[in-house]
Amino acid sequence: MKRGRTLITGFLMILLAGSLAVQGRGLAAPQTVIVSPHGPYTSLSQALNAARAGDTIAVHGGVYAGPLVITKQITLLGYDWPRIEGNGRGTVVTLAAPGIVVKGFVIRNSGKSLDQENAGIAVEAPAAVIENNRLEETLFGIYLRKAHHSRIRHNVIQSKALPLPRRGDAIRVWYSQGVVIEGNVVEKGRDVVLWYSNNLTVRNNVVSEGRYGLHFMYCDDALIAGNRLLANSVGAFLMYSRRLHLRQNIITANRGSSGYGVGLKDMDDAVIAENLFLNNRVGAFVDNSPREITSTTRFQGNVFAFNDIGITMLPSVRRNHLTQNSFINNTEQVKI
Image (tube, rainbow, N blue to C red; front, side, top):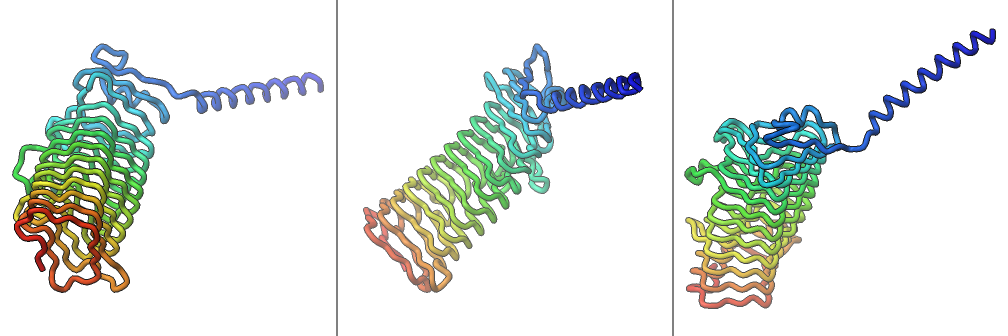
């Protein structure tokens, strides 16, 4: 009897030890995986296969092959500007798990299919951080799809050298709530466009030589502040949205076929305040804004200077309040 109890106790101890070992592996501290041209890993695909969720992959200078699809919560850190090369095929990097961080890379040479929406970085999960990267020769630069609460910060984005209608959007945000776009430099993209996304912050970006510097469609509650929108066809177009606040932006030399510094179409409760509209074809254009009878549009403390037309309002526009704005040397100050 005593021998039987001893065997049972020993068996239980073995089971307990095995369980603790499994738990110990599951609770192991995050690790750093090193990638460089000289190892220990020489390819990003190998490193991603070896890494576990929560790990950091530190990538040193070199050229590494894309495309990559990341399906774990990984922090991907570049040192000395490692390059992820797409070789002209598809999307270069896809983030398909929540909480992925990508910092410090050159990401270049996506495919050029508009139908397939080839991108430098495509984000398909929430809470991504894309920071301090350079995107070169990409059709779409950074594309967020249902990537709520993601951050796009301090990137430089340059599009493919294609005719403007054939370029993709430098940044596209699609059905993604609570996104922050901050401190980026965008050159020669098509648009920075945000669709069906609410509670947005877009601040301190420089967008130049594109079609629409900033384009909002069906977005509610956004702060658009401190941006410089230069030499685009249109500086900012705000459409079918509510409570967008455009504050303290410099909007200049937007002189395409429409050439608006800012255009408002079917907007409710927009606030346009303390902006500089300089040398545009039209500083501000207002069409059916506000659209709801209980809403208003407010222009306050702006400077309209050296535009062909300071403000154009269509004759049907009502409930626009203009206070403390300065109109300086526009060819035509206000047109209705």
